[in-house]
Image (cartoon, rainbow, N blue to C red):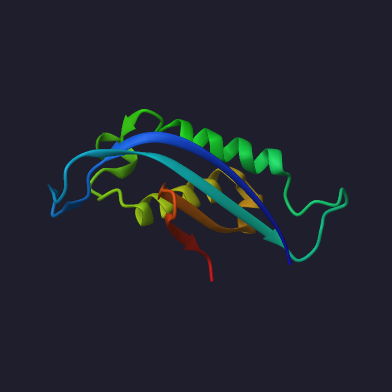
Length: 123
């Protein structure tokens, strides 16, 4: 299997909630997001998926949250924006925006801080 990985980042605040109530102080992160797509075979140009296509869509999604409070963003309404939730959201949005190529998406990893990440992957 071939795998291509792109990454981007954004700065945003959040607070984890339980039952809609904060369970920690509001704080910020320099989030980093990696996304991987894979294919068993390469296309006629020798690509599993064009890096620039994957990167463009990943950056487009991340831009929505740059310098924002995730708890106040409609995309996370009624959800506690944990790294796990953010990873799943990025995965779903990448799949949707990539169109037919979205089937190649394998996983998304979100780093809240260096050495601390969450992954959402297809099985």
